[in-house]
Length: 385
Ligand SMILES: Cc1cc2nc3c(=O)[nH]c(=O)nc-3n(C[C@H](O)[C@H](O)[C@H](O)COP(=O)(O)O)c2cc1C
Image (cartoon, rainbow, N blue to C red; front, side):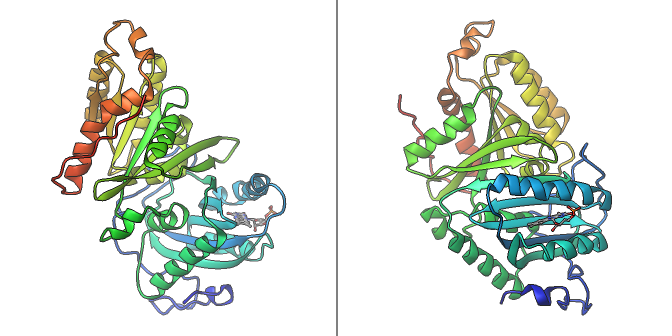
């Protein structure tokens, strides 16, 4: 049963209160381990906050990006002083918004948002009290995919039904189910279709991670979903993902732009990725910058991905290993065999992202297999010339 807006503010929560529906404690789940990381954007504490996720049909005319920028202009004026952090997504004609902050402040902002003619049919898909999960004050995203408004609406209804039946997903899981649903036919055969593995790929220079995701998608005949993210100012970064079959499971490979690692929403999901593949290039300074960004993004998270570094060279690998180890993280060097050949680094330039992937894949596949308790051998993700 959906919760129409007119009933929302008087929704009787589990504690019987007739006020804003934030009193229900959120049970722990796989995403409960996501907590706030220190962020230069603003204050962040472990104090319980109200966490609200809603979906609404967008009614903006003209450019979606311009419409989102206009909303951002209001939000960055009003939200941070009130301690409210926000993520806003536009996808398939829908808005999805995740807000966290002191209950009264969230309620006050929502009073205005509810009356805004730029959207309609607002449905609450999550509300709880708990630790802050969004580390940044503002992130917005636009997703381009084959998802239709009707499909998005179906997912909203399914989530609202599950919530009415007592199901309680964490905000990050709700966000993921609505915005990046797993549509691979293989996922439907899994006990839990949402229990697919997620691996993040980032290249130190150029668009190697994106090219690699596109190439693997082509090989597997899979769709590439493109998303654009922006922070509180002009920052505009892209991220693409594809879902490919890996034996009896589905594996999601996500290419992330380097500066995307600094976005609040990215950092809120970092604990969601089991592994982060670093595709290093021929410029040692850029390689070090990428590695530093990764360490910074992971700082303060209780669960972090395992790092796999491809193509850094022995000396850099040893340094990365020590730096990661010092922070309680795992760094696994994956040599392509070429990066040390030239000694000075010229050898690295000749190694394309495909070769780096082939260097990473055996170790990655082995770890993914262990993580899901499988004992079969991984299929070869062979890249054609
Ligand atoms: C989907 C959506 C999300 C919005 N989110 C926020 C928000 O987080 N904070 C905010 O102040 N305004 C938000 N707004 C805009 C408000 O509805 C309202 O227009 C604005 O707060 C008015 O303030 P202003 O006159 O100072 O711009 C949102 C609007 C829409 C359509």
